Image 1 (cartoon, rainbow, N blue to C red):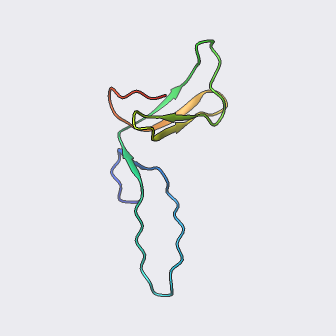
Image 2: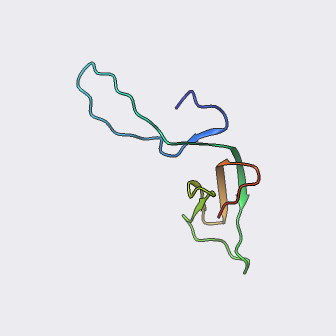
Length: 84
């Protein structure tokens, strides 16, 4: 994970494995790439989405989680892509 490009983010950064002594293990990680941004989300009535609501991209990959004030850190968003 330390060698990912600036515009890439691992969707799950923790993987558990049991190895024998001296063994070397390799794991694959799901990675999304794109822009990163902070946003404030509001519903049509002016309220915020519920705490913990997922923001997903066109491929239904999670790109953010909403906090209790409607703030969300987005990662892996491509220009022109819709999120919801």
